[in-house]
Image (cartoon, rainbow, N blue to C red; front, side, top):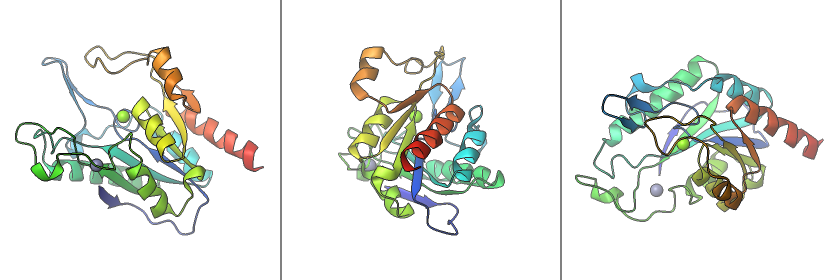
Length: 222
Ligand SMILES: [Mg+2]
Ligand SMILES: [Zn+2]
C-alpha cells in the first residue's frame, strides 16, 4: 500500500468518508479513436466528474474526514510507472486543496494478483490491500482515528461495496445510469449482482450520495 498525505485536520473528527478515485471522483481517459479507456495516469488527466466538488464540500462542512482509496495495478501490469500513479494522485490532492477541500490522504494498492508483461515483480501477487479486501480502508480509518463502523466507503463498483463491508464500514454506491459506449464495464449494474452486494445507499450522483449520508447519520446520531 502506498499512502500519500494531504491536509492534516485541525481537530479529531468522529466520522469519515472514504472515496474511490476513478469513476467516482475523476473521469477515466477515453481515446474514442482507439476505443481505449484507462484510468488517469498524468496530472493533466485529473478531471472531476460533475458535482463532485459540491458533494465533497458538503461532507467536509458536515464534519466528515475525507480520504481516498484506489486500486492502481498499472505498474504491476507493466502498463504504467509507479511514478505516474503517484504524480497523478498528488495532482488530485493539489486540485482538491485549491478548492479548499481538506482530504487527509490517498491510499493506493499498487498490486495485482497476476501482473502482466513487463510488470514489476515486487508488485505481483496476492495482497491484503486490493479492494474488495479491506486493507486500504482500515489503514485510512486508522489515519483518521475513526472507528470503521463510523466510516462510509463511496465508490462506483461492487468491488468498493464489498471492500466497505469487509472493513465493517457503511457502503454507498454511485450507480451511473448511462453506459459509456467505449467502456463495457461502465453503466448500470445488473440488478441481481447489485442485490448480492447490498449497498446501504445507491444514487446516480455523488452530491445525492453525500446528502443521503449526512441525512442518515443525523437520524442515527441525533
Ligand atoms: Mg472506480
Ligand atoms: Zn495491494
